[in-house]
Amino acid sequence: MKKQLCILATLLFVIALAACSDESREFTMHEPGVYKGGKDPLLAKERHQELNDRFMKVQTDR
Amino acid sequence: MARMKFLCDTERCIECNGCVTACNNEHDVPEGINRRHVVTLKDGEYGEKSMSVACMHCTDAPCAAVCPVDCFYTTPDGIVLHDKDLCIGCGYCFYACPFGAPQFEEQNIFAARTKMDKCTFCAGGPPPDNSAEEYRQYGRNRIAEGKLPLCAEMCSTKALLAGDGSIVSDIYRQRVVRRGGRPDTWGWDTAYDFKGSKE
Image (cartoon, rainbow over all chains, first blue to last red; front, side, top):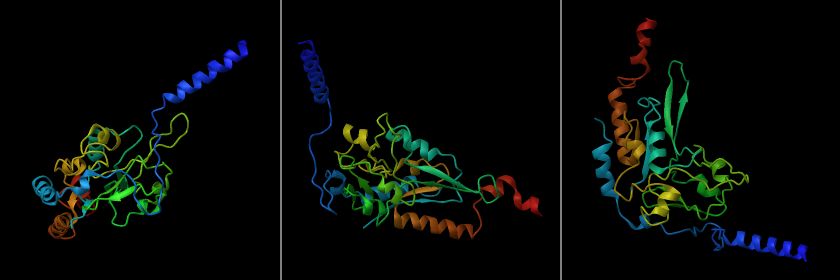
């Protein structure tokens, strides 16, 4: 009886420990050469002129 | 289309490591990682040259070519970024990169290699711009704020330039023409007057 209780307690402890894991359960099926990561909001923005203006303001020779 | 590039003028770099410190501070980079490092050749000898190196955001990036999970993507500005949620920490990119840009945190107690970390050109990653999640994983997104990488913006001698490749190369070309093949008014020759002592 004592042994069974011990096994049950160990099992409960392991399950409780696994439940605490914050690792994502999601997975991504890989396809060669295909990016399947998150979409970067930066990709949709046009900042060329803004960045050029910033460069001329900050980095040009004194 | 513009391509964002770094350029380090070796005639101007004084090996102050300010760029490294600025980068680490701005992005709260984990211990054991330096996204940027300063390489010095002929250290302590005549002709010593230093150069600040990080990810060069290659046009045809070898890290992206070897990545087994294809976690790399390139922005329209030519900035090479990666998704840490896809990265498996295999380290192939580290071996492929000729600049030593991919970095991995020091191994933890279970000897597991961490996700790859590298210079993002201060452009963050896939999470929403300047969100807490983006900052935690990739650091600050200065590009989304209309700013350029801090390492270049704070460089005291303007050795490190970061911006549109055509503008950067134009500035460097002007410098080379102005120097006329000679070093700038600072540097080894000026500091130690080697020319005078040789005569």
